[in-house]
Length: 218
Ligand code: SAH
Image (cartoon, rainbow, N blue to C red):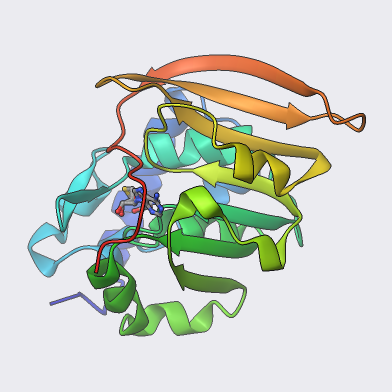
């Protein structure tokens, strides 16, 4: 069961969480405001009611996890989201990251390869208030050519290499944030597609994501 009530206690825990990720180095006010706004416990089973505000990843079923709030904030900050930017997210999972981006004003297109997780979001009533998020069941490696180009691409699973089709779907001047690496630990990268089509690569901290897997799972 999903919780539906957002109490003062939850709001207080959220405030502490925001102070925690701020202390770890997140400074973008729009990111911090979004984390403060979004009731993370809604995205988890009610068994995680208070745990939801610990800065940790938690299971969401199908062997997947909701990313750690610090990681969500870190990727959102690197993405330099501004209102009305078109953002493609690979790995919808719990939809928490998608909602954080929507709170920051982005138009979000998010893809999930696991049917069960995709279906579970369809019946998640809270998401109805986010008309700026479009949900797709598919293989993130293919992206969404029909809706391209995107201003931003965010990959929330560990990619062994940079998916070329997603680079193609990036607008010149656009950016991709991607945890890159085939092992247990990846390196957060930001790839900027310059106006002349060349790629600028920046390397950031180490993270540990679940793998990005090719093909859909029914
Ligand atoms: N952004 C999510 C993180 C979920 S974990 C959140 O905020 O909760 C990563 C997700 O990526 C998993 O749900 C996994 O099923 C999905 N995934 C892995 N490979 C994928 C692919 N090729 N295309 C789409 N989704 C993928």
